Length: 148
Image (cartoon, rainbow, N blue to C red):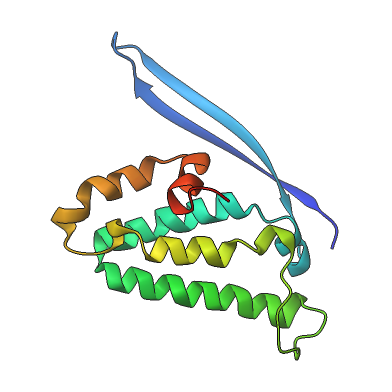
């Protein structure tokens, strides 16, 4: 499918240390496609893993960690299922050949499910969860899998 663009603009109003009201804005142009194959071809695996980690940190914050891990496994299965039946050249084959951009995603999702911050009581994982919410993409990948 052809690539189109969607434009986002975000604004954040805050008060600086001197008491002045400030507004920060950022604009972003994103590619939009109707082709599932294009989504998988251009996927940023590190950014996707970061989004997943923050989403599951939120789940672990609001629910039991085991629930978050179960949702994580199901989401990974769903992603691979969509790839196999919507994108793969031979969905009946006994093995699945993933595009380069997606190959590490199952590894990252498995690493997320093993994080200590998703296990145990909220009190024992509070500091780790707060850290997970603030990690940038590069640090997230290092946390999940120290050297890829």
